[in-house]
Length: 68
Image 1: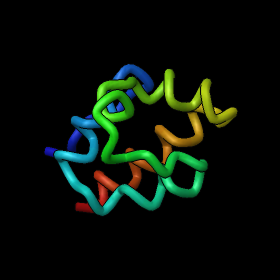
Image 2: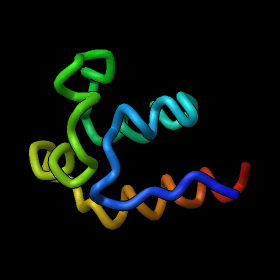
Image 3: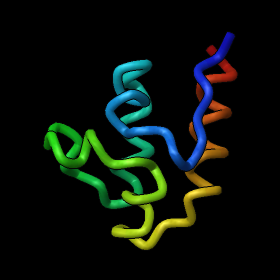
């Protein structure tokens, strides 16, 4: 069963499930992945700060995890 990602999923949980998704966050300008506060944000919170559509990022992440 693939890891389920929603806009309410905590970034730390996503990275813990598969750190290979880090480039998706870097693409959106989120270069602080090791920061404790960034790891505690939800996908929606991070997208709001970085001006990214959360649904687009969720779709990319879901596709990544579905391919595993």
